[in-house]
Length: 237
Image (tube, rainbow, N blue to C red; front, side, top):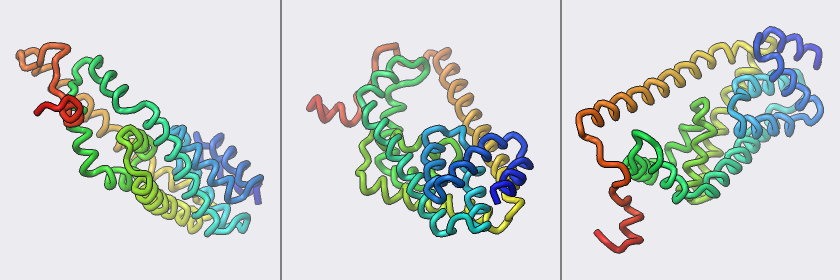
């Protein structure tokens, strides 16, 4: 069966190495191996879940692991990886983030204040839906840690979002059989679209800030408004 998986993986073009590595893990560890691969994918976004998850579904279809086991273990892996990034965000902390933002050109501390306010209102939705957006599905755990989102809330929405994403791709691989690698072709277009939109947003942000600065709309360096939490600490309004 493993030879069959490698034969299918060879049709995946540039994903040969990743498919082979994931196949080795699943061969040696079964469903927990799929979970380990997904945990690492959270920590190292260049490892594509759109390759690992359909491959796990294909492996389950071949009888080398149970379908339920693949779904459960990959979701566990997603949560473990997300918890690690949440911990990194918590270690960095809000104060360090604010200190860094103050040193960044074109970025104002008010931008961070607005982001924090937005995350306070929509953090649960961001964690849930963020689990279904390439690249951001890993990164969303860091601001959750920085803002110290309640752990039970973070775990709930991370688990739900991860379970939904994983189930879609594992079932696709399970149903497609030898053609499991076609999933990556379709999702690759989606991923590129997300990256293009993110790049355009960054470019638009820079252009707007540069134009405002040239028109004299920028605030002198080193001055900023205190964020909501700073007001609380200073005791001023």
